[in-house]
Image (cartoon, rainbow, N blue to C red; front, side, top):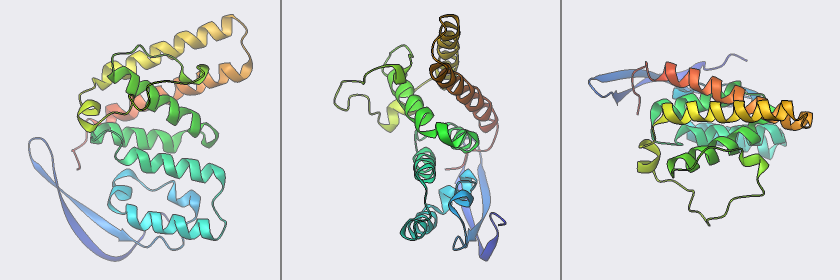
Length: 208
């Protein structure tokens, strides 16, 4: 179907940047015929403005048995990305990176990114979470918005890429199982795409 087709009047939303005010013309969209795959293609700004309507359509699809496990994981991850850090550039880049990631990897990369980001914000070195038995701390890795926005994201993303590339090289040289090598490769690809999307997002006007 045609994504983003407006079925009602335009509305204007005022959004502020750091130096000047921008105006974004937004369309109110009828999602009643959207499939789960369609919902996963909705652009970041549109999803921010219409999350209640998107949630309603998701529930309708779920009630009809039209939500597969990959849809549930993907749509939950996308919803979480909308307001993950409070930094619009990070959140948009995260959202877009999830959209372009292989659907079978979304659970892995979502968990890995969030744990890496939280650990880095608390002064930890980045290491593969999926190779650990689990973290302790009883919630100590949950960040508030002030902590999240204070992270040097360029430093984080560069450290993440370097760490996982190093682990990928080790896995290959030690003839680790293909599944482990593939997980490392998937995370490296995720972070590189994330970095590209973040660099693009930082050049765009800020939308609250």
